[in-house]
Image (cartoon, rainbow, N blue to C red; front, top):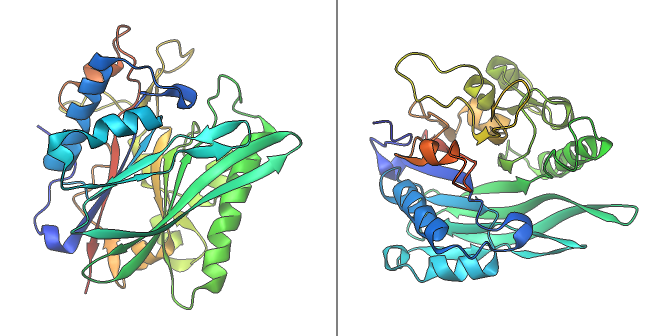
Amino acid sequence: MITGCDSINIDKKLTIAWWNTSLAPSGKSRRCKTLRLEAVEVIAYLLVTSKVDFMALGEISSEDLTYLQSIELFKDLEFKSGISKAGRSQFDICYIYNPAKVSVLSTENITSEKGTSTLKIAQRIDIIENQSKTLFQIFASHWPSRLWCHKNHADRDVLGIRLRDEVDKILKSSPTPPHIILLGDYNDEPFDQSLSAQVMATRDIELVQKRKHLMYNPYWGQMGQAKSGEPHNRGSYYYKSGLTTRWHTFDQIIYSHAFVSAKKWKLSDDNTHLIEVPGLAELVISAKSKFDHIPICGIIEKVA
């Protein structure tokens, strides 16, 4: 069985995860008991088996968050709500984290006005790893579905440009390479313009090593048909009505130069990027289930 995030030395490692739960599309809870129970099983697996220290959950409502907080298994964890208004829409993200490993400093909504619309670029959440006191600047995003914002819509470029603007602000104000992590459901593939050109997220890790402004996106490697012996899904999102493919790599974790130069923290060799939760892939491809996303994770480890 692939756990996705096994750890040899947990004290030196930090595991970060993202999962679009499908519990509350557009921020409105489905109020489905079965779906919530299944979601709890997935989250519990991520926390207990995959040893996730910091988790961002998408498509969550305040009602769903209250339910999760009531689960006895999660009593030693901290919850942070990012659910908040953004124009006529809202951010639908919450966070669960291990207070023994990390502390949350602040959160900020990043939006962009376009006419009468408000684009939700990201939610910035700054955390500190308690032992090393390293600051990690995380941007969690849930960009619009392609059902109402198609692949080549200008808004998708705006989303990427504005997210890049936030990265550049940090780069320009930091005396040393900052530890920036972008994660979420972008509803775009790694090769799409919004991420590859606008955010400057590349698969070329050697180029990121040389050029400090570039971001490294390992999810280029999560596309394509699964090989023999691998989990049958190859991607993070399943859309059964896809014309040319049903699996897409819309959920991604992207890293700044600091993780590639590996002076303080680096990407762990343990990374599988997609977490194979037992039974979840079968639910995702089932027409009877509302789940359509696979959780993703990133493991980073302290160098010195």
